[in-house]
Image (cartoon, rainbow, N blue to C red; front, side, top):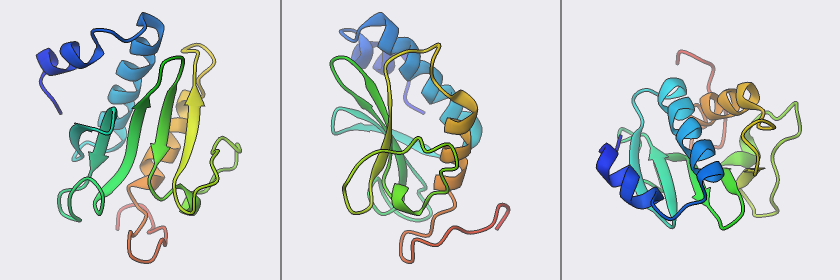
Length: 132
């Protein structure tokens, strides 16, 4: 994960309510994907598996920072199970969950989506079973 001073600098001008969502998402991702690497790209935090590649090939999710909301974005979201129908977007692969309220965020389902996103094979878009 990035050093705290870098996080503070990045989030300096972000609305405090959105900052709380971002910090909670970072904790959620760290818990759901403890071996993930984190970088700041494309006006957000990007998480990836170094063993699979860099931020694009090995990427599994991003925290997109917008003026009035935060998006938890999944690079291969089209392959994720979404029983709560949280995922939005019309791009070929990428999907996202829009968050504008900490209290209304579906934290448990977001954690499930992050865990599942780490199991998507980038080449086949197949979801590997947990533990494999």
